[in-house]
Amino acid sequence: MMTLFPVDIEDKAARIIAHYKERQLMLSTAESCTGGLIAGALTEIAGSSAVVDRGFVTYTNEAKAELIGVSAATLDAFGAVSKETALQMVHGALYRSRADVAVAVTGIAGPTGGSLEKPVGLVHVAAKARSGRLIHREMLYGDIGRSEIRLATVRTALDMLMEAAQAAA
Image 1 (cartoon, rainbow, N blue to C red):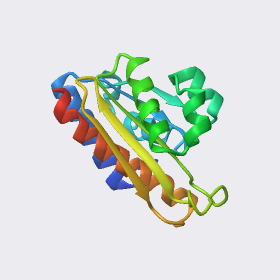
Image 2 (image 1 turned 90 degrees about the vertical axis):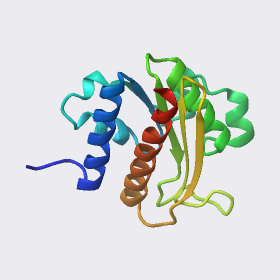
Image 3 (image 1 turned 60 degrees about the vertical axis):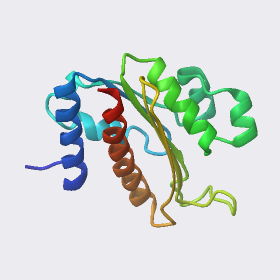
């Protein structure tokens, strides 16, 4: 059977869907550098409609502000690719949805856009359960290629969705 995603990603997504369904949990995503790939991986799994409430693709600063409430002050002070922005993104995705758990990603997939302070391959991933558990990871994947950075980010985000679900049940 042909699949859109690598087998390991599909396996992680299937485990999340089963785990969340068993616990009657819903999730949402807020994605920048992955452009919807996390939601895509999850919705590749049959039965995901019982688990996936919604996904926000917030590629621009305007979208981050309008759709999920990232403040202009945060974007101005720290930039789109920052821990502070990722934390506001996950908070917005959680509280502007019916989800019990949300995940958010913002980063630099390249090949351009990097700097000394924020190199290509830098991604901030945040996951939060409505119960208050908050997880943040700063990932430095390196300049391994745009697609590889995006897929690595999906893997990290899926792991964090599973981790955050432990506190949400």
